[in-house]
Image (cartoon, rainbow, N blue to C red; front, side):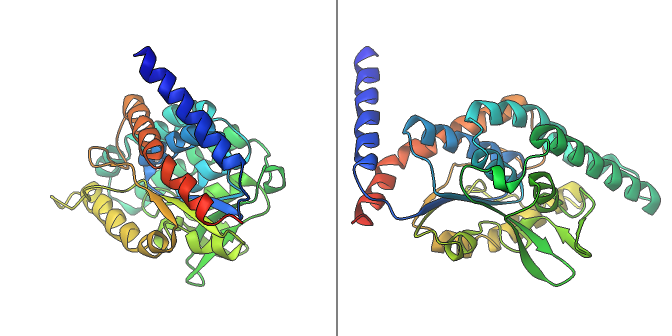
Length: 295
């Protein structure tokens, strides 16, 4: 065991020295949406920390936008994990159950959406406080969907809370966010892995992180939670394909055994570990990409 640990530490030193020893064109990491599965993104951040690499810009959609913002602000993986293990479960951990048990009359359903939206707002306010995009260590770009104009909307300035509130407003779970008189919802609807946005912002190398890899959920019953899960999976998969193709490298933690809208703190920590392992397995490839694109 001691020998293996020594080899691992030597390997880490080699990776770090190789990265530092070359010129790197601007590179970005982009986090997909995924509800609770976004815990895997935090594991990827942990792997980057251990190898002493940090992107020149960061982006994300949906819950991936929240993780992107926290990372861009300089938060460490342990801090983000502690937050998400508690508040992520509070937001999404029993969403399936809430959707199925809430009464169906329009007024009560509307009240539930309002309450869910207020909870999301409160959690974001507490986590990010008054943080602004101008305070990020590197540029950060968070994608949401403008339903009024049928277009992608990118948040790169203003308050982090507002950007995340918009980008995480999943239809059926949270009320839409109103931005400059436009109705804005979750970014997964239009661009669930916004690699194109980071390319437009100047990234020459983009590493995509797909937190929805593995077997896809399909509706097995007419219950609204089953239908919603399957709808989100199919739509987000379709809206992620372009980003997967445009990435220089994709990290895909296998999330087969975990749901987007149900789980507990133990599930969060396991998905975090899966993300970490998936990123570590790709570390040599990441270095190779930097070497190939260096000058």
